[in-house]
Length: 150
Picture 1 (cartoon, rainbow, N blue to C red):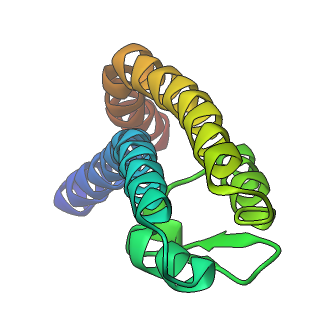
Picture 2: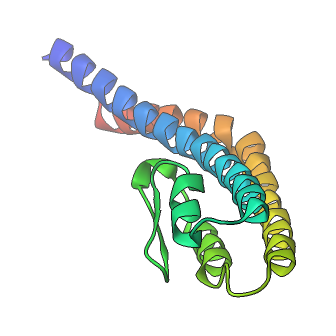
């Protein structure tokens, strides 16, 4: 009976630890996704300045894999770990893109890039503050649960 309890305790610790590791990894993925979006805004700005192509096609080419824009809203796959405010910021940027002259659109790209970079810096700060905390809390909560169960 003791061996079964020991195996159960180990499974609880591993499951809770795995959950903490996944939460920590999602923090890193969000920072990485925001960096890719920032690079996409640069690419989009450069392609718009060259001119001669449809704006919808440029948006589809520039957005990172996992992000789609339907004309009103940006949809992000779950594996990108983007928050709703991140998607809303990108949606606001892309919604009226191409409605003005090229110089205004490039200024708009630069201003939204700064906002996205601020979000990316906040995400990176969260990674630095919470990455180890989530992993440790996952394992400690597993140990606590297994001790309560024992």
